[in-house]
Image 1 (cartoon, rainbow, N blue to C red):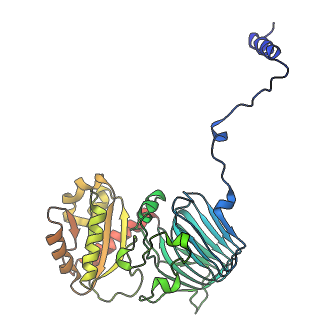
Image 2 (image 1 turned 90 degrees about the vertical axis):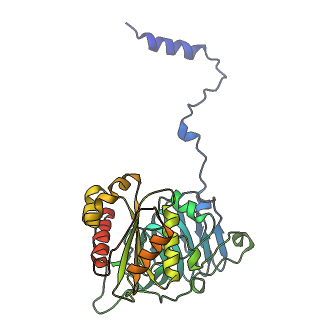
Amino acid sequence: MGCFFSKRRKAEKESQPEDEEVQPKQYSWDQREKVDLKDYMFSGLKDVTVGRLPGKVAGQQFLIQDCENCNIYIFDHSATVTIDDCTNCVIFLGPVKGSVFFRNCRDCKCALACQQFRVRDCRKLEVFLCCATQPIIESSTNIKFSCFQWYYPELAFQFKDAGLSIFNNTWSSIHDFTPVSGEHNWSLLPEDAVVQDHVPLPTTEELKAVRVSTEASRSIVPVSRGQRQKSSDESCLVVLFAGDYTIANARKLIDEMVAKGFFLVQTKEVSMKAEDAQRVFHEKAPDFLPLLNKGPVIALEFNGDGAVEGCQLIVNETFKGTKIFVSESKETAPGDVDSFYNFADIQMGI
């Protein structure tokens, strides 16, 4: 007994004209726009300024290799970026969703934002960094770090497209996989280092069209002191809860506190649960529990003599009607800071 379907397929095949070409089936992945890898790499360049404008990388992987004496600017977000065997180059990278990996590079100066940052077999790098996780160096020497400080109009949207928060920046918490006893393979750049002295703005007409600013007050990422020695033994924790204007409120508070001479030490954006709030806010926790379901909180640590009173005055005058946690006193503030950032580091796996 034959199969009905096999007979039908045989009949259909016999009914087709001999000169008619059978078209292959089309699948969804066949319809995708083909990616030309050459559009997503710079290789073997020397003594040139090159780059990609906003919208030209659009989340693809990017490769930079074997470049010498080049100025390279990627004004867009990308998936991952690998930089291999580059010498004496200036490199700017817009937000990178995954990792940035430097290998076998020397005498390079960079500004970049990413989820993960790794350096291996490199020497003499200067990096203005925004990194959501702990930066890692390995078999490398004379690596210097500072906080990312950059602005252009498209940059804030590119951070969102890359899934990065401007408040999650552990730029100075370096982990050295290959420490040498009695030596330091990495250090922090001077606090007064001027970004443009290290990573100058592009000079070609095409790239000058991107309206870049390196002023600290305009930087998309808040400029923090990180692990630098604090100028005072008084700090203050401020926690802002999710709402329509949370980011704007955080930036305004930072601007006003810095204008009054206080220092921003560190920032963090993280989701909290009720039990987390109990550990951090203690008896004040019930006031904030209903706000936790609205989204992540933004925490800011300020430092300087009178920081607690300064924060309280600004919050009470500028943000009336908005629930914000502020340390109650100079005595309780260190515990507030430790409780929150210990929780946040565990939450984020740092």
